[in-house]
Length: 234
Length: 107
Image (cartoon, rainbow over all chains, first blue to last red; front, side, top):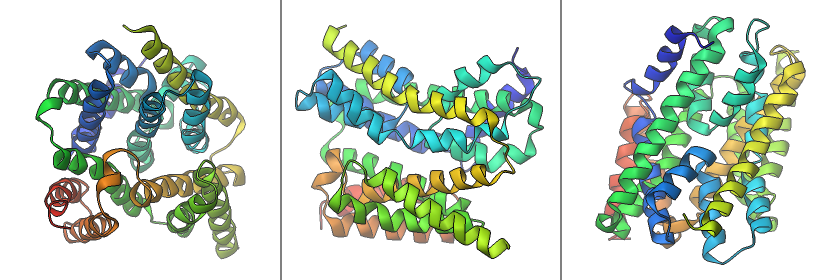
């Protein structure tokens, strides 16, 4: 089954000095408060956090519900905004694949693909033997989901005490945290260039095509960065 | 639970899981040393960077009410804190929340 040592090693990884736990909790506090304002009850709020476990997707769902969008519209809007999870999965799972591990672990744990868990795994995978990386990953994912549920619960319970300034503070925290993590991860030319080009192209393309901006910026920026990286190696 | 909310949650989680599952499924045949893997790695970082930049410049939710200048200033100052604190992730994150809440009253 799951190797307990590596599972708990992964679980503990979010309690380090530069852990994403605080940022993640604060972001889900904001989501919990938003859910309450939308008319969700506590069970629905936690159900949503556990099942979706992706901040932009939850925000899109909330906004779509506010304007009375159909289920098909919600599906398409969330799919577009969360399509980034596909390249994230493809760029992570080959690092964890091992023939001794059953496939269900990979199919089950793909649910944990999200920016925080992905960046933690990307920074630490080399320290873990390949055979046990999937157990370590399940540990990271379980920890980040636990923290998200706690944040949702706090946000839902204390939503009436959160004024607009506090909500804004909580909302900016997430992109700032991810930005710092991305800058910290930019240690090679292709990665640094990918981050730089994605940052520049994302908002520019948004002006012409809001729905496709993230995907197009990712494909164009990432491909240029990859080609430059390959050229610099050769 | 209200049926409409439950359906919305289920549809949202299905749309989210689809990308994750397809990613896990197609990555089976990809080696970590292959060019395809390196390309997808660049794609993932660029996509995330685009998402973060879009969230800051064209935000959704409560951040819409914060001015561009306050958002830029918070991000800029947080990056300064990030480098001063020897690339610690927690200090700039907490700083950004406090700074945003304060600046929103003045800018």
